[in-house]
Amino acid sequence: MFFPLLLFSQEAKEHLIFQNAILTTNPAKIDMFEKALADHNKKYHSTDLNGVRVYQIRSGKNTGKYVISSGSTWSAFDKRKVIDGHDEHWKSEFLPNSLPTIDQSFWKFHTDKSHFPMDITVKILMVDMIDVKRGKFKEVMKIVETVSKVLKEKFPEETFGIYTNEFPSSKEGKDIAWVYFFDKASWLSNEMEFGKKYDEMFGEGSFEIILKKWRENTEGSSREIWTFREDLSGISGDIKSSARK
Image (cartoon, rainbow, N blue to C red; front, side):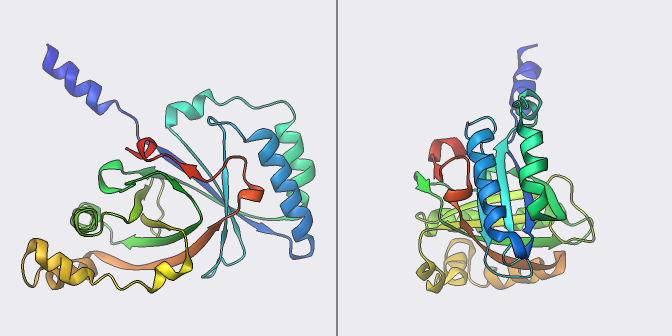
């Protein structure tokens, strides 16, 4: 009797879910948009249960847009309480300064494939969105697992998170998100020689084989740079390593 109960308790552990909403400001009201967003988050979203971080997208087709991100579990979403005045403030103070083009998505965080070796303060994110071919999700996640393994062992100082879209659309191409966290733009000039390190771990020629499998099972990817806007956020950019494990 104990063994199936043990299995159930392991399976019942909830994953961390991130709710991301991409918002667009009215170009004529940027200052009012940011003030309303900052006021709203600092008043209504400054605690752990309902705290949010705001990022601004700096590259790609979404350049200039804002991402409001909050992390929780599905059961914790049920426990959130609407604070008096929250909805009214959002409708009267914020929405009039934005465009009606909100894009909201929910992402499951994969602890086993991610790597947060130390406490960090979020500053810059490089976000890769991967478009997986239909029916090939398991194959792609196996590749992600091997790449993650190489990064953890050969580049132990790198901080990255792996997320999968809880409600993907075959038309959007946003199935898996691979996110790197770093402090300075100069990080982007680092030459990792990843292929060489991959071959060292899995054998000569392994990297070319995995690249071929990657191309066969994905439709491509897109990349964006996000910067953390603490001035618009309800909580700080501090992330404890233990909170991601």
